[in-house]
Image 1 (tube, rainbow, N blue to C red):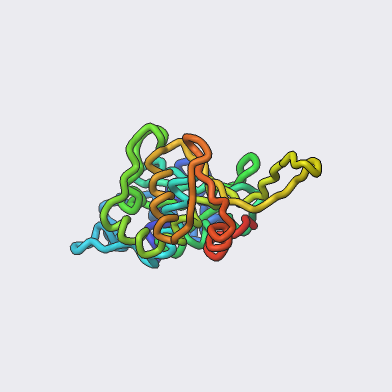
Image 2: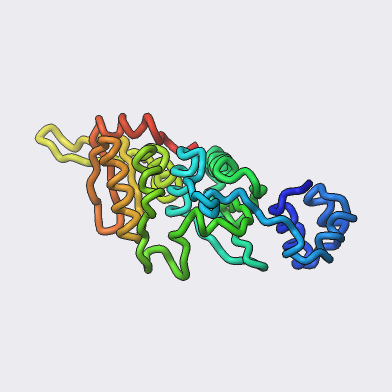
Length: 253
């Protein structure tokens, strides 16, 4: 029996104009099954029961560390859009210069909710890691119309519990999406002449004050000293703080 997410993807491809044989080739499902899906009303299919937030006793997504990582990626460079028939698409946009981060994003997405297939789509200079599922907004209730910095971003209690337990993974997701580890070069004029020195530092930039605050709270939990460079950018520059954050994040790869 095929997963409902596979059926949803097949129907999406059919609606986009692909033939049954082409959809069969892309999904690995037989043409006869795809034809049945096309003609079978959705209410005749068994209801999906794998959403942890829709269970009779709602619980948190697992593994919790992967969810914390994916939440950081989503708040940094992700979004959710509504597609046909109440299906939602979760997308994380990853710079093509960092193939390791693309794989991390795909792995985190697959681990949090193994049911829907995780796909990749090449964009201009980046790769969109995406998955279709009806319940993504339940796992990311921060989803809403417009840009994130134009609306309040507040974690639900169950999300805050996960971030508190795994702040290192949450920070990793934030910095690997909207941050960086770079060398800072400083010029000093001394009596002996002009001297240059450089040191590594982390930076996280985001237009949402709420997301910046969440990043700061997670860094505090890790004991990492940080400060604001300007209104929309945070910096971790002290040697011991950088060394500590290197244990959890490190350079992009």
